Length: 109
Image (cartoon, rainbow, N blue to C red):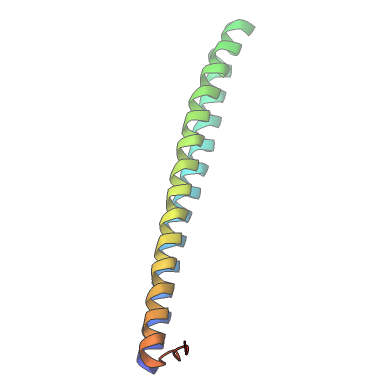
């Protein structure tokens, strides 16, 4: 029973580590996106000849960034759904292990 509990704790730690690694990557991607967007905006400001060019370029940049933000959000939700599935499987496995060690009393009819 002790080994089973330690294995379960180790497995939970692995799930958490994997989840944090994946979520940290999503955050790093967001930082890169903002840095890239800032650089593009500075470049756009230096190359704009008039207000109309600036507005057009900003609109394009906003559209591109919005698509990338939505993609990142979708990927983040996928990570969270995967983590939920892993945790659910972990709990079910734990409940199965507990029921094998400590049998539940049967109800009388």
